[in-house]
Image (cartoon, rainbow, N blue to C red; front, side, top):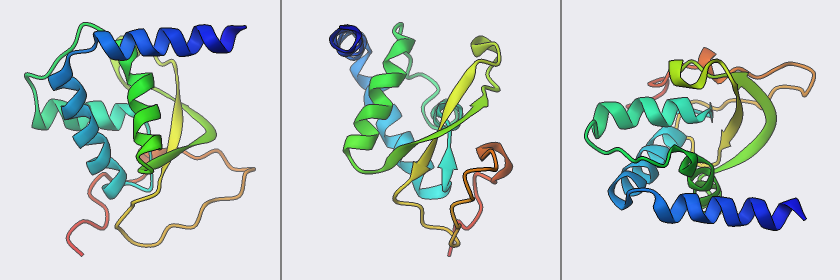
Length: 130
């Protein structure tokens, strides 16, 4: 029963998000996926603030549907790993780690499942310009 409610809530969040913000976040999500083999939504928000500082939305819960849209576009896929957010507004809450499917840098082997993956250890511009 919670699955239809979750889909409904995500759909409402997506519909109420600012369309300009949504497009900027999609663009930033693709750029992050091209530059980092593993990332969290903090990375996308960081790039959005640099490239599109005026793109905002009142509906920040739309980040969940945004990541689902990026996954449907085959830019990334969810992993089972979680790390703490670095954004002050998130109060160190756990953030899902995403695996890029369009990463363009040096080959990165997926680590064994025993080791926690921390995307903050990977430089944002690692391998760019090759």
